[in-house]
Image (cartoon, rainbow over all chains, first blue to last red; front, side):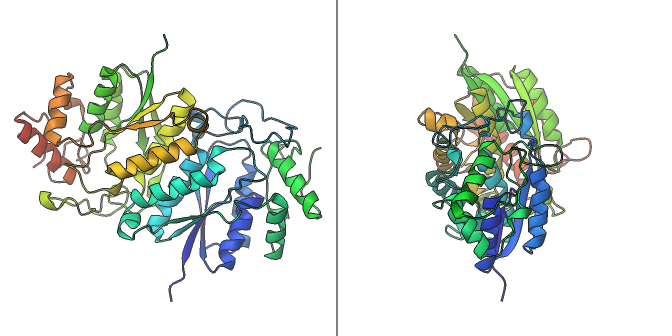
Length: 229
Length: 229
């Protein structure tokens, strides 16, 4: 019997790694995809590769694309990454927002999924403990899925062949971590920081570090990350 | 008064050039965007540059992205480009279909539009004299627009800020050509062929050449293109 295939967007962080483990536990053959988009935190690409190997992905594709030529974000441009933001105000869209990033990432994943004959595209978006990005919300994901099935051969001929899978969307960071631990993930492999030091050490103060620390604290578990502060 | 801005997807072909002239005639400041995606017909990129200059675009962005690593199309892979297809059967999706190509192109255009503060994205898709690609149909474009407004800051904060403009969608090739001529376009600048010779001469037999020839014939005008056959 042919194995069912899934494309998994992998950033090298906790969420996408947990999603990959979930897809694997559901019996999918994993095709992981990462993006070199001119981001400051290129350490995440090394993490993504480690994770693809550790979780037995069939293939790991790194797509090169230079979003810094488009600009507009603290993740790709010379704009400071916000530090120490109030975690009750994270719903405000911050400077780390990359215009239409998940739309672009999902579009590539869709293209690859169509070539592979993979029906399911997994993405680790989360609408609870998140930075307020509009492209992490359920209504966006639903709209992308609709569009994907209208704009592809497999979608049209296979009558809504594609599913955009977001198993973490309604979980807290603590719940995500507990889920991942139950699936055997070593979170020491993952990288979350938006603004790491040259050696890859996490800053400890960007949104991504703050959300990670909070998640481990709430889950009552030790965070294996080395933080600068 | 600040000029209103439009991002125009430019392939260097007749349709996108006509669209650019329409956007210009409507008073938009033009930001044209093209893609180097590993296509066989790279001559179209030279045409796109010529056209941006000729039509006075404010900026012309060429985005590099290697779709050939994803594969699956005669336009990027070592698959023959179909020749001499029956024009009554062009609704069948051909081997030149590039999986999710317009989704990827529009996603980049959306990202750039958000950075520029441009509300309108023009694309020369056409659902009459076309090759049967699912991502050229009105229902796809409508779904993309909905998704774009849910997945971006400008879309969410500006309440459906983005419009995907498709002024050619219901026109025949002959109508497109007449429209372009009335706007002063020299179609000698444009390049349509999917499978040109090294010197850029058009093959004359691919879908794109056949549709172009038919358009000029129906419009009762001379096609300035040099064809091999």
